[in-house]
Image: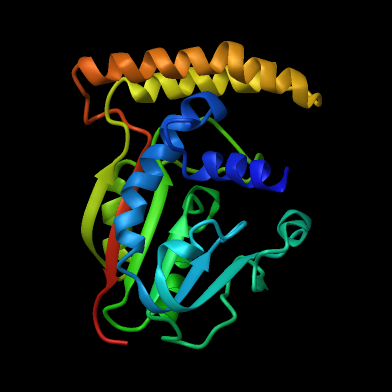
Length: 241
């Protein structure tokens, strides 16, 4: 059973084709995983994961030391995966402590993004990379701490203003997968109950068919680079310490 749970959990964050049936967030999670994996694979040395959650990407890097830090609250404490907890403002590390920083699906929950990005810059060594992901099209989540969505232009300007040089910026699911993902997410929210069997039935009978049809149609219909799910960015700390 533990093996099945591990496989199911992996489908939620790094879905294969089976994720079409297993997860209501298939297109978002698969798009993020595909864009993140090569970027994270280039990270070496001491790597800091800010907003680490369950640390699902720890094995994707070549880190010699991987440190997960998260906001100090009941939810992250219960997850039991963060190595360090902090107050959401000042990271408890000295200047230039890490070779690289990861920050995935966190920035939209930060009320003062410029201060946050400057804090990430402070703890990474000069020239060190940041792998950052943030939604462009998504519903409100983790309420009430959901504060922003970022276009590619706004995100680039914000990073450059806070001392980062953007090297790559990729948009995930820039085609029919985006509205299909929103539909699947809507079905998930309106059918969600406290009963696992009913949730599983909704996933198999309602969401999985939407995913499957969406995948086929997205493969044959034109894309739209102006409508997409997430931004995936690699940036480097610019300037002197």
